[in-house]
Amino acid sequence: MKPRAPLIGISPRILRDVPKELGFRGKTLQYLEQSVAHWAVAAGAVVVMIPTVQREGDIKRSEIDVEDYAQRLDGLILQGGADLHPATYGEELRACRGTPDSVRDRFELALLHAFVAAGKPVLGICRGMQLINVAFGGSLYQDLVDDGATSHDHVDADAYDLHGHEISIVEGALLSQLHEGITVARVNSIHHQAVRRLAPGFVIEARAFDGVVEAIRREGDGFVYGVQWHPEFHWPQASDLLSPEPLMGAFVDTAARVADALGATAN
Ligand SMILES: [Mn+2]
Image (cartoon, rainbow, N blue to C red):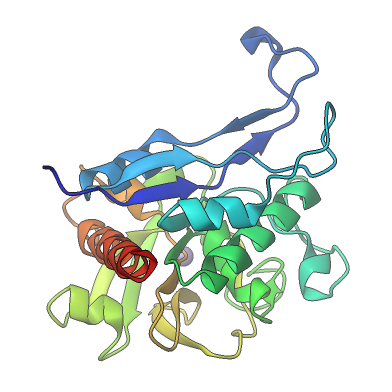
């Protein structure tokens, strides 16, 4: 029999003002960007999206909670997206772009804590990494340039995922181990915020050439990892960019190992 593939949940992006030509008048869309899913599928995972859970739903109060997802699924990927509301790290809204979505913030924070409590691996991409840092007590630059963290733009609206920069990978970091000890690589860059105060219990795995934090990992046995770039857009083209496969491989392998261990305990 084919071994059971790990089941990975991806948190949704939320679109509240749906362009007229798509239909769905007055409705809210929850969606995932396909390359995130394909990246995980390519590493051997079965992937589902996790729609937001509203205990006080429009139609009927639900007893389903984030814990149900954390129990059933083997790992969580937090997608990129709009800025977190700075209230999540105790600041007034100052330099955010776009409209923060507190429903998404609350839902993803709850999901993250539920998966971590269940001992399941979590991988955060861009906003997802920022959310991980905030969830464990860190803070963000609301805007890297406005806040004086760097003079280099980490986002270029026209170039989008063709905009990038070099990173230095910390010696001995997991990311370095996954890439045969390399210490320099190139990644895309589609963000104007980043980690300011690192959350307690986390280590920095990589920084951009200008010092901006680009990858973080929670210390200890679990797998809670965040990258500031979008590895899913590195695949399958761009050969000069850091391969996204080792990191996803490590995440999916951890999900499979944890699932096996929990299964063995349950039997
Ligand atoms: Mn960057």
